[in-house]
Length: 364
Image 1 (spheres, rainbow, N blue to C red):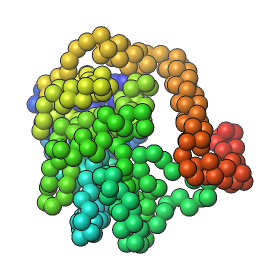
Image 2: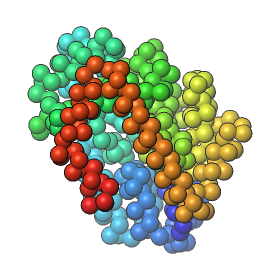
Image 3: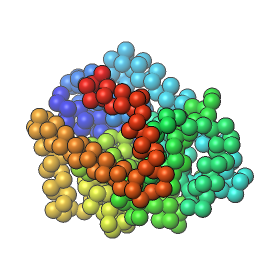
Image 4: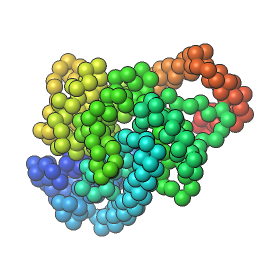
């Protein structure tokens, strides 16, 4: 199996609990025994959908077609992830109770927000990193103070740390499973005005006392986190964890309407939706608006699997461009933001930071 064939197989497997035609197609593939399971494990793990793959195969009784050793391994990893998510949900609800008691309403989003909203049949399906929530401009500094007073401390304590623009420094608490990101913005600086707290707050929903995004905005942030924050629109790389969330949310809201609800970001959103439609084998709930931007996007997306060496070179150019852009932004902030120049000076004169960068350059 080529990388693209493996990716498409995994993506289609993620739909078989809800799509009968895909279920029949995957059964035929499994019966043929023409599956490179080593590649499937490697790719699904890299895309953070390994537990979701297991859960979908289990729900339709397809585990019988897999090697016993692989099934046991998948079950073990999924059980570990379920236990982790149980703890994450408990931690998020504890934080929610704490903040509400201080007249602060957090809006949970991304993976934790989806867990709290119950979009997964089995909470083990979603692999989650941090607990992300966003606050109003007025509540943002209050939330930081309240959470820090609740024995949360900075994950990164280096003096040369430069604060990100989207959220406060990651916080952690002893004996708590996940780090916390207190957001003032959802997207990176250039796009923050288009999709922010003010935009999402107007149609948030409350689920069991916890505030989360509407289904449409859940779908949009699942795409934008990849397309904009992770530069996926430029790399033209598929991200199955984000795509799987989009697929599930397309069963709860009209995906095509959702991606066109933010006019200035509709191209980024619609292109990713088109990629989801392709990789998930033409699922009707993922239907998109076809136009020249989408055609160009899909052409480049598919060509990168045919020409991996050219793709690697192109990605390196893109990476270098954004590296330079980030450094320019840092210099600009040092000039325009109070206190930032001092932090930059601390970084540049730090022996630890210089050693860290040197190791990154030489590959050690």
